Length: 298
Image 1 (cartoon, rainbow, N blue to C red):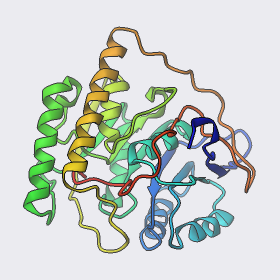
Image 2 (image 1 turned 30 degrees about the horizontal axis):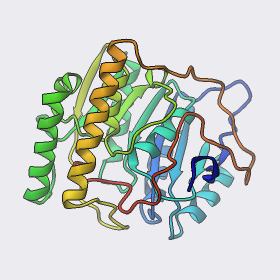
Image 3 (image 1 turned 90 degrees about the vertical axis):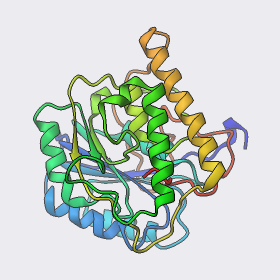
Image 4 (image 1 turned 180 degrees about the horizontal axis):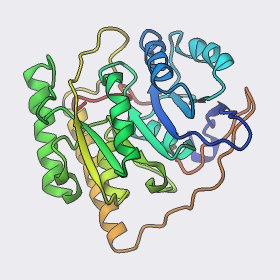
């Protein structure tokens, strides 16, 4: 579909009390997660009963994920829904959410419960303590990759090694491919468009210039329900190499002052059912993709 003809996402919700600003925004990307997203949203509500917003970016789920989200939004006006007309990569979905975030901090995590919600309060405390980027790590003492099959571990370790070889900013982390992290929202760059990919952590390591960073150990869980969105084999390797190359270029352009950043403007919210373009994100010209929401490196 030509760029000008691509259907925009529908954005609804996000109606806090007058003058209030959420302290933290949770960035949650879904595709067919009707069994897991209710569990995750309830866990967040339990640990963060006030001053937070949930931003769910759904890439055209075919199960009852959207029906549940609409129902939840009726009693939780701090839920922002971004409904895309088709699939995109996980990086683009998370970036859509980050651009929409109003919280002082943003926390990104998977919605399939492979990232344990129990870590969220500690991750949030680290952000409040003054860290700009806090990354969940499977490789710190106390962390674990769980029951991951050896082949996936080999791919993940190899991909992490490549990142550390070509992206110096990732060398501060034991788990640079982690998709479980928190960031000071003001540091997120507002780019005209973002490339396809899966690793929001690598993207933020390339572009945010954090002054203080830290990691927290966690145990990665295997999916117990829902639909896996893993891109497999050679296709994932090719996409990851392109993604890493783009991140390296972003870092280089930032260092040389050649990257134009769009200053963030005031957030806008569409009325229920109103279509609204997501500022700063271009996902056009790629067509539909299969396996668009996860990767072996997670």
